[in-house]
Structures are given as C-alpha cells and as structure tokens.
Image 1 (cartoon, rainbow, N blue to C red):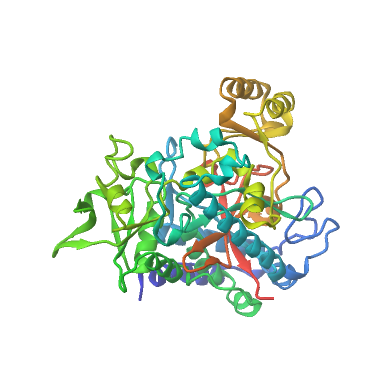
Image 2 (image 1 turned 120 degrees about the vertical axis):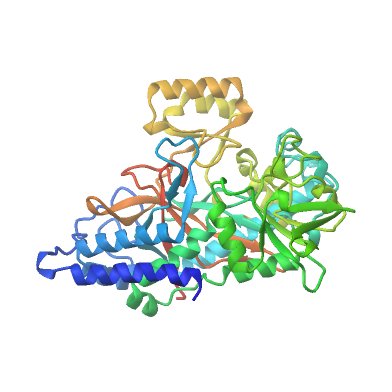
Amino acid sequence: MSFIQKYLLVFELLANWVKLKCDSKFLICMKIEGYNASEHYDEMFTNVGEIRPHYEEFYQSLKKIPIRKMNHLQFSANQTQRAMGMTFNVYHDNQGLEKILHLDIVPRIIPNDEWLKLEAGLKQRTYALNLFLQDVYNDRKILKDGIVPEELILGSKDYLKPCIGLTPPKGIWCHITGTDLIKNKDGDYYILEDNLRCPSGVSYMLESREIIKRAYPNIFNQKGIRPVSDYPAKLLKMLQHLSNKSKPVVGVLTPGIYNSAYYEHSYLALQMGVELVNGVDLIVEDKKVYMQTTKGLEQIDVLYRRIDDAFLDPLTFRPDSMLGVPGIFEAYKAGNVALANAPGTGVADDKAVYAYVPKIIKYYLGEEPILNNVPTYLCRDEKDRKYVLDHIEELVVKETNAAGGYGMLIGPKATKEEHAKFRELIKSNPTNYIAQPTLSLSTVPSLTEEGISGRHVDLRPYILYGNEIEVIPGALTRVALKKGSLVVNSSQGGGSKDTWVLYN
C-alpha cells in the first residue's frame, strides 16, 4: 500500500464514522433552492434559478445529503489533508506557517464542449509564447517590427542577458505552464495571467481528486469524469523528452523544506519516482551536473527546477544565492543538462507583456486569439495612466512583477487612503503597474458556515509542452472563501475545489 492510499484511508474511516454518528431525525436537508445566482455568472444555476444541464445529476444527489453530513464530510476532508501533509507555508503570517489549502467539497463541473474551447485556446497561447521567447532571446523580429515595445522587453528585470543567443533543448522554453482564467458575467472565459516560471498547485489538484472521489463514490463513478491521475507519468515523459539519452536521469530541484511549495516538490518527485535534490546535493564538473549519492557521483540529465532564475546559479545570477548550483548555467549552455522551465521565461509572463499576447498570437501564428485577455491599461502609457489615475476607484491595479495576490489594489473594495497610496505609487513608477476593469468572477456553490453559498472562483489548468502540447483535463479551481471577496490566492486566505471535466 502506498503512503497516499494509507492516508486516504483516514478519509474513509472518518467518513464511515460520520455515517454511524449521523441520526437522520436530527438532520436538515440542504436549502439550496434559495441560492442567489442573479448577480454573477454561477456555474451551477442560471440567473433565474434553473440548474445548468451538466450539474443536474450532481444537484439531485446534493439535495439528498443532509447539511450535518456535509459538514462532517468537510471535516473529514480537512483532517485527511493534514494527515497527508497537504500544507503550504505563508510567510509573514503570525498565526503560523503551516496551513492546509482548504478543499471545499462541492466540486466545480465543466462540460466537454466548454473544455474543448479552453484546450484549443491554451494550446494556441502556449505555442505563441514559446515562439515569442525564442525570438526575443535571438532574432528579436517582433521587437524590430514594433509589435512589442523594445524597451518593455530589454528593460525588464526578467529579461536575462545570459540567455541571449540560447536555444533550449528541443527548442522548448515553457515546459510547464499554469494559466489563470476567470469567467465573467457574459459566461465567457478570460485569461487573467500566464505563469511560465514555476507554476504551483498541481499537487493539490491531484490529491484533492483522490479525496473528493471518496466523498461522492457513486456520483463519481457514474458521471463520466476525465481522469487527472496520470499527470505525474505525463510530466516525467515530458521531462525525459528533453534529453537525447534513452534513459535520462531526472530530478526535481527544490529550494528546500522552508519553501511555500515544498510539499508539492516532494510529492511530484515521489510520484515520478525521481530524486528530490537541493542545491547542496549537486556539483558541476566539466560542465556536467552530478548528484552526490552513497555510491558516488551520478550524472543528472534533466532537472525540473522549482528555484527562481535569480537563485539558480550564483556564478551567473545572484552571487549571494545559497539555493542554487554554482556552474549549472554553463552546463545548461553546453547542452549537458536540460532545465524545465528554461531560465528566462519570466519575461513572457510579466503583466505588462500580458497586454500584448493577443498581438503576439497574431504575429507568430496569423490567428485571432481563441481566448480573450482581460482589457488592460498600461500605466507606462501616458493616456492609459491618466485614465487609471482618474478611475482608480473602479479598477484593479497590479504590480507587473508581483504574484500571490500581493501588490494589488481592488479599487471598488479599497479605502480612499489606499486609492491615494496607489496613485502615488503609479506616479512614482508607472512602468511597474497595470490596471484592469473589475470583472465579476463566476461563483460556485460552496459549503460555508451559512450553509451552501456562492463563492467566487478562478481556474488554473496545467499545460505540458514536450513532444506536443497537452492540456491536463482538470484544473486547480481556486475559491475566495470570504463572502464577496475576489481574491482567490492561497496566500491571501483562498481555498480550492476539485474540477470535474466531463467526457460529454
């Protein structure tokens, strides 16, 4: 029995205990008939309260589950996450470092036709961004043609000069991508941002599925839900594809146990059956990377690195880095080790570059984007900046290089003092900020202290780029646990849902 199977027994034991303890005469069936779905696009209900067809079967089952049993199942899910070590670290949090990513037990369901459009749009976007990265580090045609401002790219702190003239193994820069989307009032998906550096969260997608399958075994087996459990095998195959060796040695390079996503690093290494290594475990000799083992040195051919570019190699990037491997970048340039994602990808997911992605797709592919961007104002542009300063109460303002919900102002929910602060920040450093309309994120019924209530969600599908581009038929749905909140980031108190993609 694997450790995952062992820990999942915790859920089944707790759930069985719940079943024994529940006395039906004291239970009140869920009141979801009065659920309000009129203000936002709701994934389960139309604005007149009708059930969307892809939720009908689940809804009928949900109505029959007493609220007390739902609460106990939620408790079981929380305890199972803790038992499995599904935690992350929140820096600068006085309430403690280790937290679980709260898993709401009401899933998000996506019909097949909707998913097919998402899949096509994400493949198109990933392919175009890869061509863009290859271009800006080599011929720079898109800059010379004036499609993207040259100073925006060459002046970016994420444009790595050591990568100029490089072509990564197999010509692939962005091997693992986690693209964030939202669904607006109109029912259409919009790309919120691209994550091309070290996208996280896939382990929660995988383990949440195992927990939720046990919460609704009958529904899950009958519903026709596309599996995600083969992601580690697909990830390994993609990583092996980057090497020309028939049996390449693969490793996961982690910053260490204090990193916020360390659980995910160790989980993926275990599931792939590869070594989890720190910088101190590796040495470079003759421009080759070796892992120190009890049997001596063993060469590593491919590293799935979860270390930021700046800390990867103190000889090339930050000299004060204690996390990276001295000389690894020279080994990479020599073609003796493949790194996923390739160093330098961060310049393509800068929030200011994001505004140009529709033009990037048109330039390289000659196609219109399948998935739309959120309309974006660039504060570096005088006209856009004036509009943002005049309408900051209506907009969401973001730092171009910030992540995790930090460096962000949600205008309609901010105070006058916060508006004034961000106006001064924009004026002092306009290139560091963008702004977007405050979109109405869709809602999904969620289990709260009030019962079943709508909570805002986004969607992070994962895309692998190896021999071909593949979108995993599931995603991490992040949910804003606070009523009315639009901030879904785990570091800001968000949670997650299992995402069911239907076969038909």
